[in-house]
Amino acid sequence: MICPRCKTENGNRTICSKCGYFMYRVANQNVEKRTGFQRAVDDTKIVGKKVGKVFNIVWIIITMIVLSFWIIALLMFLTGGKVILG
Ligand SMILES: [Zn+2]
Image 1 (cartoon, protein in one colour):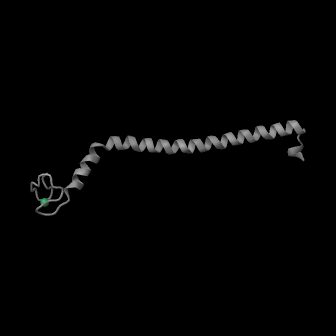
Image 2 (tube, rainbow, N blue to C red; image 1 turned 120 degrees about the horizontal axis):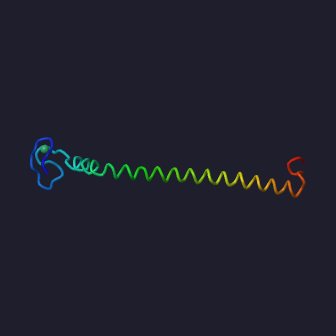
Image 3 (cartoon, rainbow, N blue to C red; image 1 turned 90 degrees about the vertical axis):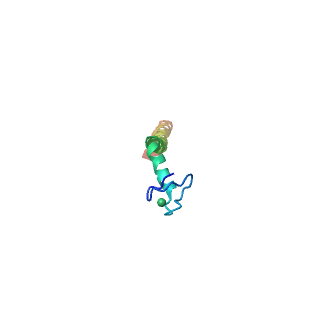
C-alpha cells in the first residue's frame, strides 16, 4: 500500500513507516465508496422496518378503535342504548 501523504510504499502495513499516516482509514473510505449503493439500500431497508413498525402501531390503534366501536354498538344493542345514554 502506497502512503497517500508521502507516497512511500509500505507493503501490507496500514500505518506508514515514514510519516505514520493511518492508511487503513483511506482503505475503509474506498470500501464505503464502493458499497455506497448497497449502504443506501440497507438504509432504505432500515427505514422500511421503522415505517413498518409505525404502520403496525397505527394498525393496532385502528383495530382497537373499530373493536371499541363494535363493543359499544353491541352493548347499545343489548341494553337499548343505556350504556351511552345512561
Ligand atoms: Zn507516509
